[in-house]
Image (tube, rainbow, N blue to C red; front, side, top):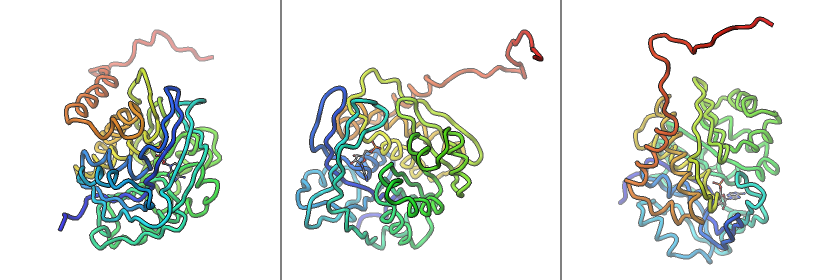
Length: 321
Ligand code: AMP
């Protein structure tokens, strides 16, 4: 009998077709739950709740379980696996969805196993908010942290369900453009204020190559993205960020302010690996040294000495006009 996982994710397991400035790749393994679980598996014991169809390659399921990911909640049913195709030709920071085929997700009503109902960390990855809410409602104990993600499709077609979900989670991770679409605000800071007012502990606004900003009720913290010379495929960067962020928090079992700041750097570390190759190729093959070296690179990237001894900046004049 495997140990009770420390974290649960519900989201998509997909075959993606992408078109990026470096080329095209069809039918690669993807999905929000897949990227999240692979990124977080470096840090914690994670279980996946999702559905796949008859066309799902058993080797892909095996790859997840070989990493220690609990796939007992990954059910296989008649029909086709979720498929998404997107293009980044116009803008590397946000995908243009060319096609979404929900397929087996259209009728998916997850039922959690007993050992999945009391995990301390729950991630409701991007999928229909009604599925996200159903998983949250099946928890027997309120997790220490519940986080969720979403996208423009759900804001367009399932807004009321999404808003009521957000009112019941602790952390929302969302793209910059989607935060503006969801709130109707015209600045990220205003959108974050609006979202925090719904009762969230933190909103993490993901800004592609410009990094992410954590708007927490106690502080605001910005983390850059790793300055990458070539981005091969941005697909999965957001989910890998979330996997590093929550995977790290779950591994140290801490949701305090300092832990959240460091977790957002771990999120950026994992996102930086995700974009280095198509699909999961790079993300799934990291060594401990790779992860620590990239984390150190972020420390160098953001390090500066504050002025010591109560000194201020050498501002030479002030003007009253
Ligand atoms: P991101 O981390 O934001 O780049 O998310 C990329 C993943 O989201 C891809 O692997 C897609 O399969 C998945 N995806 C795209 N659209 C949807 C959707 N409507 N619901 C769930 N997952 C999606």
